Image (cartoon, rainbow, N blue to C red; front, top):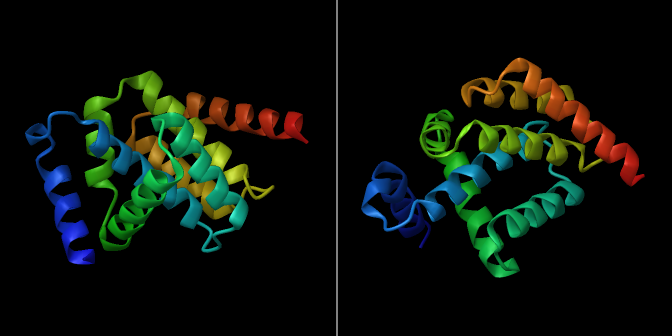
Length: 154
C-alpha cells in the first residue's frame, strides 16, 4: 500500500504535465514543505499539527479526510526525500512571487503555532525562502506579520 502511494506521488511529481490539473501536485509539494517546518525542531506538537491541518483545509478547500491523506502522502515523501528540490522546483514553476511569499508567511504562522519559534524552525524557513527566491526583506516582513498576528490573537 505504501509503495503504491509512493509510486503515485513520484509519478505525479516527475511528470506533472501528464495530469489534467497541477492542483494536486502543488498541494502535495506545499504540504511537504510545511511538514518540513513542523519537523524542523524535532518536536511535532499537537498545536502545530492542528495548525497545519487547518491551513491545508483553508488553502485548498479540503475536508478532514482529504487533509489527512494529503499529510500522510507529504510526510511519506519528506521521509524519502534527499533534498527539497522536487518540491521547490514545482512550486517555483507554478507559483508567482506573491504565492511564494504567501507560502513563506504560512511557514511562519505554522512555526508560531506552538507559541515560540525554535532556531531550527527559523533556519529551515530561511533556507526554504531562499530556495523559493523570496527576498530576505520579504522573509523578514512575513516573520514580523506572523509575530504581530500571534500577539493580536493572545
